[in-house]
Image (cartoon, rainbow, N blue to C red; front, side, top):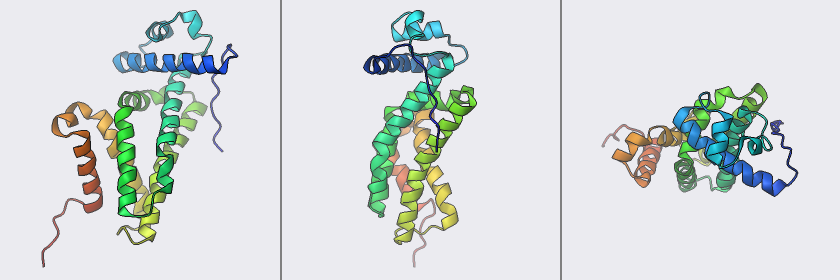
Length: 210
């Protein structure tokens, strides 16, 4: 069982903690994207979030706590948005819908994903392992759906290839975040989803005519 990293707060009001930490996360993402995690200070994070350094330390203890909150928030949203994937039918249509939901999630959280993957190595060991376990869980959702599709005869894929195919889906979606500065010159989001899904399902080789 994964052990969730605990970020301590001196404030007892749960709703206020959630509100303030959301402000901290939003400010930190903007700052980390601009300067990186190591070059950003807690004072700068507080300023970007809109309050004093003293107020910041009522809700976190270290700068690493802030980075952890960014990562955890992303995966909480991922779990919320992708929870329906497990309920999709084991059909090409179900797989296509799941990919569409995931890629649009990446588009909504592009800055957050970039910050997380660039900076998560700076997390304490226990917090990093928690984040990595969340990543495995996200990939596992697609692995389960791909396996169900293969078992139903919808996909021509070997059992040994299912895990790799799931990783392909996850990484190809995240590429939209990492390379969007160039990809948006070439595709709309709809076009990118369509092309990547077609490439996944049909490959790059032209069918041989009889």
